[in-house]
Image (cartoon, rainbow over all chains, first blue to last red; front, side, top):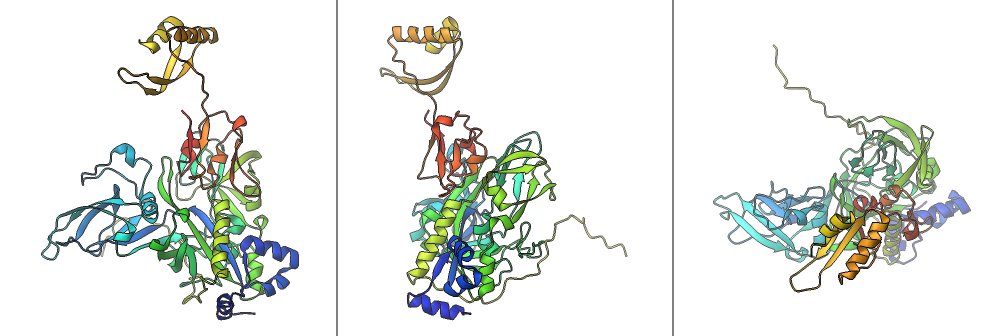
Length: 399
Length: 119
């Protein structure tokens, strides 16, 4: 029907037709998929949700005399330093704590903070305290560094997120008798509440279930700036069981994302903290789907009633937790689901309001001609297994 | 004057100090939660007024910082009175103050610390 090159040509001429995913679903319902697919070039999807498998690469620039960093804290949050001399990786879920480096921040100031907050502060243009100790060598004689950094005063500052945009997820409940504090927030005992973290029909990867129009190299909206799909995400599991509409019945595909944090906007990058679980990063991510043919739009037309997620009991703290079966996203978004005949209130964890705003912001960038689509340089793998890590003990040679 | 001591000793009223701002030679301010028999509470407040202490009643309220809120909706699942809800059209958080019983379960639930109380 159309190629990405033709779509980009229309974007440059200001003639591209771009719909948000909500508009696309409405148009497909009203006109039928065939007629709607003839009209639209690009459908924009967006999400705004906690993505703890995220982090930032930072290159500080060299000091004089130079230092090879052994250990480094940014506002009390430990950053990984085991590669280039002044290269750092700051993980979103790293907990702030008073360290051995004589941090001046006291316990109360560090409470409820972590790597996600430091990343968000840097993107908001704030200064961040840095304390580092060095591994003294002939090349790098300096033993310690104490300074403040901001995003203007460092070389590279980009997010490299090993796992984002989970294609579907689970619904958390607590069938036990004490409150649980989880990565889905507090779960009240005796099935007191249920929390779902995926957006269902708005979720980017549920609108391209077999990852046919996105792949490695796809340009995306990341935190308000431009980003790319860098690789398959960790725990990428495309072989998850799927419904006839090709959408998975539980956590499936994931992607690794990369993008220049210096271009990002504080509105779309927010530190967050889950009580008695830890810090994370809320991130706005938008994925444009080129409507290359009618089948692509047919997948975008999927509705919440046709998407399901498993209800998982967090009171059993094991890798495989018992489930209460599948519920549809239409049920989840109605505010209550029935579990074993009981009414259980549901609450989301992803912001549907800001997700919609991401899809609108991406649509506007494309309409303004400032955001062209890219042809993936390689597909995302379709055959990854989900391997558990079991302890096999030391291998003993008995021969 | 040892106010909370007198409240306890003379009126059998328990005073839970929520906030205090007390300095030498200045008018101080205490925010206290009083619990006890309703008649004795009235007597205790009358006694305080007789001592020249300005007494005013405030009720604890939930405050939502709209600049900070990301409208994720996580708080709506722990709100027992459904005072906190997502608007079905805009998906923005709405708060019905008159239904709120100030149980405060939403405060630690909020992942971006947008919810607090006025005290």
